[in-house]
Length: 420
Ligand code: GDP
Ligand code: IMO
Ligand code: MG
Image (spheres, protein in one colour):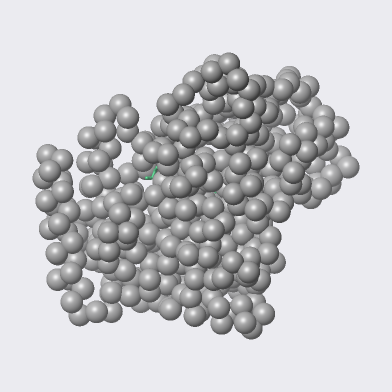
């Protein structure tokens, strides 16, 4: 069967750490969407690693890691990441598999991402500038080059055709960039990519499932960044929700068992777009400093605020979340009082549903206050040692969401997690 771990907020919920923690219980870890816009942090022998393209199960020697067809793959990022992983004694040629249907990000996609953002001015999305939007546009526009095309002798001709098409679009944006400057590195990375295990991903995974093997699907970004259900247009370009697992790996919906949703004990967002519970004050600054809230991919400071239960409830509904992991609970150790948003006020009316176009309306969060636990929780190993005030906060969330928090992460380390 397939279990899924995905983010329920605006990304960076701590998915990398949680996937790394759960990976020993599975035979395979598979990424099903997103690309190098993701930055998944985990600690290997105390050393920090940030993965952008490779699934977060890679540091467990005997696990298969699959990059699925739903992912957009930047060969340059992959090459560098494989080298970093290999430095830890991991044999990517043995443990890493890539679907031939995975779409490629080429250098002109990154230029188009920059051009598009520049043209939007103040209403820019705040993209990671990794070429994600343009690459998915070429997928749905039926122009993309895919990993399987690398084995085709016309690959270079088709690449040049696509690059020329992009050049015409860049000219339309009046955006000047020397794409050729990035091509040597790109083609070198393609040579490396050709030496990896390129497989027919959907047969590969379904055969493993038939043999009784278990799969952990690893989401990137978060549900509020989903192309259909997120805070459009301030979203990413893929389906980040559990439905994306089926189309992004080629597995049937009835193969999915647990949907494990990851949420921070508070909330962050990086990039533009609505964020009703945002704290643009010293409380937000305290979250950012204590939680080290700086982007793992871009280094940008993350916007911080209280947990938004209206959005969390929505995300759980859309994903069919069966259990939750609450991360970064320790960051709230230092707060006297905590707040949780259990409703919105829109035009004087109380609302508990996510409205259409959140960015166009004035939303005031209705905040319920909780006494903080004010204890160092980072060394706690078992549930009975958790402060009672934390249990009260979690109980309120469970009740509001209708799905249980089953794990509390109390630090970035592999062993800093408490099972409830
Ligand atoms: P992802 O994109 O969802 O994998 O999350 P990121 O790696 O972008 O951001 C999460 C950050 O929080 C990383 O720096 C993690 O090392 C860190 N982290 C994860 N879980 C915890 C936790 O429970 N407590 C603290 N203090 N940090 C955590
Ligand atoms: P992980 O997997 C947080 C945000 C960007 C921007 C919007 C669109 O680490 O949680 P894109 O580059 O996808 O076109 O950017 O989405 N974004 C993320 N925010 N975590 C991520 O990934 C993100 N990936 C994209 O900041 O607002
Ligand atoms: Mg991240």
